[in-house]
Length: 118
Length: 115
Image (cartoon, rainbow over all chains, first blue to last red; front, side, top):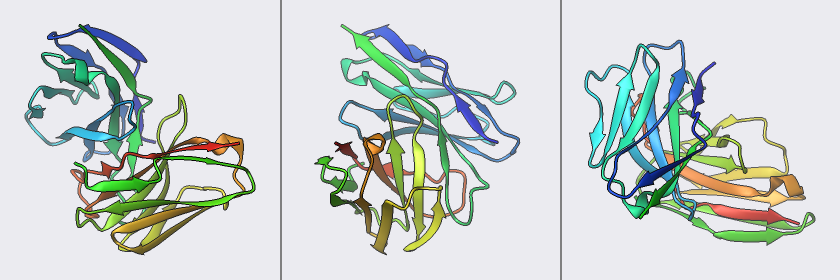
């Protein structure tokens, strides 16, 4: 069964520094998608970045990049130049391609709480 | 993305009450989802609708009853809930196509407290 593991319950980072949030996954499928979401205290889950299992290059979206190591089954999120507004919960998720019917089931990790310090 | 809205944002209800959560998406998507987020637990998928047809029900108790009258609206009807049902309920939508890059966009959630 697919599984997402985020081993860091909480992280601190100084403003303007880079931070890496860890994510490992377990799947026997060859084709899958990996997602990162940000959840501020307001509750909304905000999509940040996507990495496909067949993508040869690591995904980047502005200050977010994904360090994808397929052989190690890891998909770590790197946030460069941290800002105070980056303080939030961050969730790694994987699309289960074998979800029933036309659904696109996402399997989420338990999240990492990031606190950016001034 | 602010294309998915949810009302109410906060709800307090007694165990004998009946209430409904509403979700609306303005993204032209064909699939909609209900998730439950409890403290210290991963997000739990509750229901999935694709083209207004329920395609997934993850063993959710019958006191939760979803309704999808059209592809833009999704409801979650609540009745005789238990205190352990207190959680953040998140709605999401996606295009509804079968490919790995299918991205789900979430609403702000409804924080539910059952007394």
